[in-house]
Amino acid sequence: MTVTNHSWQSLPAAQQPEWPDQEALRKTLAELASYPPLVFAGECDQLRARLGAVARGEAFLLQGGDCAEAFDAVSADQIRNKLKTLLQMAAVLTYAASVPVVKVGRIAGQYSKPRSKNTETRDGVTLPVYRGDSVNGFEFTPESRIPDPERLKRMYNASASTLNLVRAFTTGGYADLRQVHAWNQDFVRNSPAGQRYEQLAREIDQALAFMNACGVAPEEFKTVEFFSSHEALILDYETALTRTDSRTGDLYDVSGHMVWIGERTRQLDHAHIEFASKIRNPIGVKLGPTTTVDDALTLIDRLDPEREPGRLTFITRMGAGKIRDHLPTLVEKVTASGAQVVWITDPMHGNTFEASSGHKTRNFDDVLDEVKGFFEVHRALGTHPGGIHVELTGDDVTECVGGGDEVLVDDLHQRYETACDPRLNRSQSLDLAFLVAEMYRNQ
Ligand SMILES: O=C[C@H](O)[C@H](O)COP(=O)(O)O
Ligand SMILES: C=C(OP(=O)(O)O)C(=O)O
Image 1 (cartoon, rainbow, N blue to C red):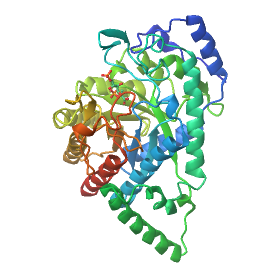
Image 2: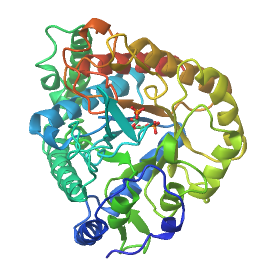
Image 3: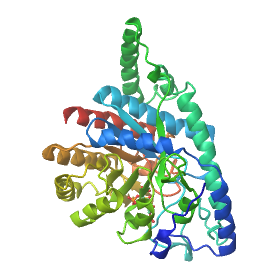
Image 4: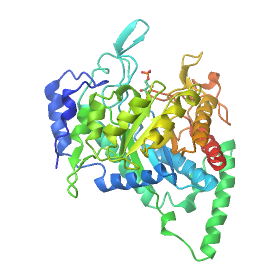
């Protein structure tokens, strides 16, 4: 049953598309509101419970995936590679840091992008900026850049087919922990991260063989609990996908298990926070370097009035040069307030720069340094570094510089495929997982 979550509509909403055909939009939203949910409310509750364990310091959150999913990239290979990378990272973290890992993809709904500018200029031609496949086309033509509500239905369908395959992989045997070697087959020979992973996979194998010999073969190894998440940016879409849970009468945004509010739309008295305050999904909020203690405490009052561990995740994205200065006071005051939020670090969004080649990129060393800063701050305060949030792909792209299998500025043009921000490739993602596992162990 669809129920209104419309209170946000009287408030300013940043970053919303200017749909030229309002009647077409109305029809599309009515149609979307009649579609089946993409996730079940009970699964959102399950994720909230898992995040509750993270908030209490008993588990670690791995959240990652594309900056912007694209309709023409919804293929078995692309989805499998991304999932495989996340599963490998989770295996590294679980085994090397001995911590349960909650796995959440930026997947099956991450089609909408907030932008710094409304327009883009190339060779003297200025057009509306690309806002994600849910809104307009990436192609730099006037026609393609017109917002088209039909795209919201394509987003729903692309999310549904992605989630379907993810569910098949995670429950149908592919994600069985006994497949740790198979996830590496196409990768191990020529990559330092792959070789390091293979060594760890052998150790996991031995541990499993030992448990088997002892007569313990837990069912849990056969399937993987994996959740979806995306930025709740286009509020008309998220509202059309908001439903009343028949079990409890509560509202859930059933477009994904977890949704987050971005740095550009987290104004306290604006529409996105109002929307998020009405739904029961676990909610993330990005916190950039300008976040004040008052902002953080008011966000908690608005989004987590019951102080429920797992309801609210603060995703800090300060930048490597700023995290050590800005994060301590926030964590200290929030902790002192008695709230039990999940703290995770997004080491990507504060570390973007334009390379001499003209590509928007990030340096692996900066990414790593922000994660290090995050761990240092939490260690000093005795609080829990709850997880990482990264933009990554399972493909061997060349979008971020650095890493063990080093990508140089001169390599960026080779496979620069992102529709928006630069992602870690598979080798860089695995490098990061090993380094984070080390930091966690030393914590
Ligand atoms: O992914 C995040 C934002 O959408 C992105 O950083 C904005 O990029 P822009 O500054 O090119 O608009
Ligand atoms: C837009 C994003 O990040 P932020 O809101 O932190 O800029 C994002 O994660 O896609």
